[in-house]
Structure formats: structure tokens, C-alpha cells
Figure 1: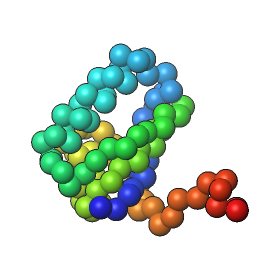
Figure 2: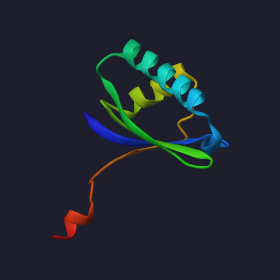
Figure 3: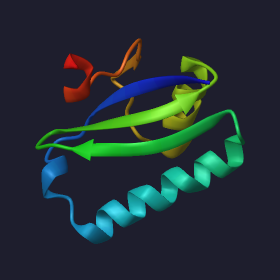
Figure 4: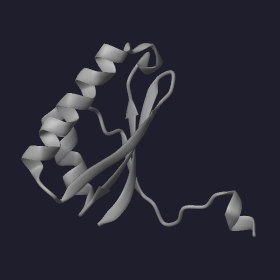
Length: 90
């Protein structure tokens, strides 16, 4: 499976409560279990007005299917080509 970063424009995402984030996570997991093993949510980063999600999936179409069924926007879907970190400099 390929790794993707999904940019979701969600106004005031940074103000979501823990209960709201829990509900969003539960909805995402519910849809993921319906879709099957062709997609996996790794983690997400919540900022002021956006959520950046990292997924493994067979294709962008699976990401789009998840977004549609869960009701979450997927404003931009980018396939990762590499991952670097401070140790890359060594």
C-alpha cells in the first residue's frame, strides 16, 4: 500500500473538544472497518483550520471513498515519495 497525506479544511479544527475528536475518530474507524483492509489510518495532525491525516491505502480512490462515506472533506490528497528526519543528514 502507498502512504498518503490528506489535507482536510475544517474551520476552527483547533477548537474541537476531546469529545468531538473522539466522535470524529470513532466515525472514521467505523467507515474504515466497512471498507476493509485496503486502507489504514496512521495518525492525524490538528491545526487551527485544517487536519492533516496520514493514511496507507491501495489508491487515492480508497481515500476518496472513506472521505465520502465518513462525511469528512479531503481537499488535497498527496502520495508520499519519501520520509526524511534529522537522521537523514547523517
